[in-house]
Image 1 (cartoon, rainbow, N blue to C red):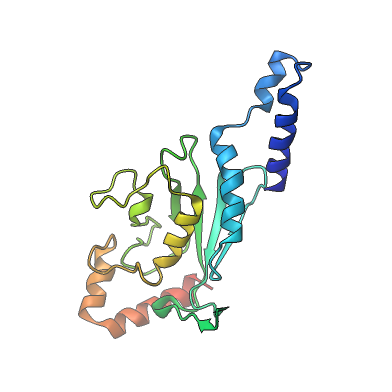
Image 2 (cartoon, one colour):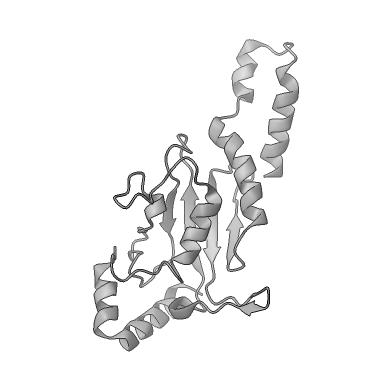
Length: 196
């Protein structure tokens, strides 16, 4: 964040001066993706849902970060208490990698926490239309989308985008349809075992 941003500023200052050798120019070049990410990370951090935290293991690599979603983490926003339903009390880790071709292609996201969810498999695959490069419903990835959209979308998988009608984890969706109480018990068991 600050480290990469200061690198970009330093690089911009050196553009006018031609004192550096051509060989060293290639070491100072910053990709379009990284320039976009400096702006998008600042926007993301300023507009992060209260149930989310973002962590950059290496501040020089904004294209690799971890997101923690904690549904049911009570926060007051304009005097409203947010209650996050089935997944309340869990702490769910996501790993995000932004490819070189970003923003023409979506980030790659995987859920690292084992979860019983209709839109997330137990191996971490995620069904969220904005993460699809091509989407039948027209709500897939577009170059106008940002990391903020991705984080808000992942957060919404625990509330309003929880979708039992078009599941990726069909077994979880059918379980919910058969026995909602037993579904809740299995979600609670997974939270206790994997999401603390």
